[in-house]
Image (tube, rainbow, N blue to C red; front, side, top):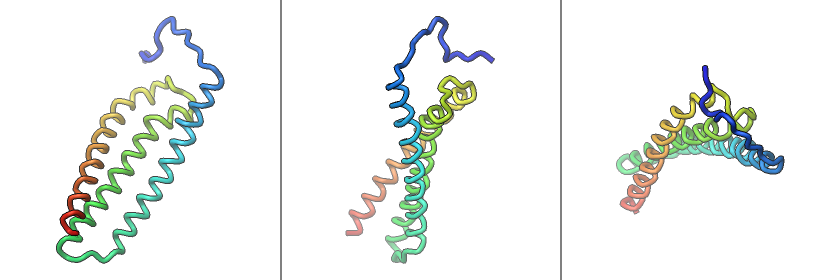
Length: 130
C-alpha cells in the first residue's frame, strides 16, 4: 500500500517546541475535552431520564435533549479520532489513520449538523413553552 500523504522530497522538520505544543493541544487537551464532554453528556442523559417532564411539551424537550447529548458525544469522539489519535500515537502519517480520516470527517459533519439543529429545536421549544 502506498501512503500518498508523504510527498516525495518533503524535508519539512518541525521544531521541538512546536511538536510539544501539538502533542499537548491535539493529544492531551483534545482527549481531556472528549472524556469530560462524554461524562457530561452521560450525566445529562441520566438527568433527563429521571426528570419528570409534563406530558405535552416536556416530551419534545426531553427527546431533543437526549438526541443532542447523543450527537454531541458522537461529535466529540469524531474529534478525538480526527485530531487526538494521530497526536497521541505520534504517527500523523499512519496509513490506517489516514484511510479513516474521510469517513470520520463525513460522520463528524453529520453529527455537527444534527447537534446544531437540535440546539435550535431546543431553543424554539423552550421559547414557545415560556
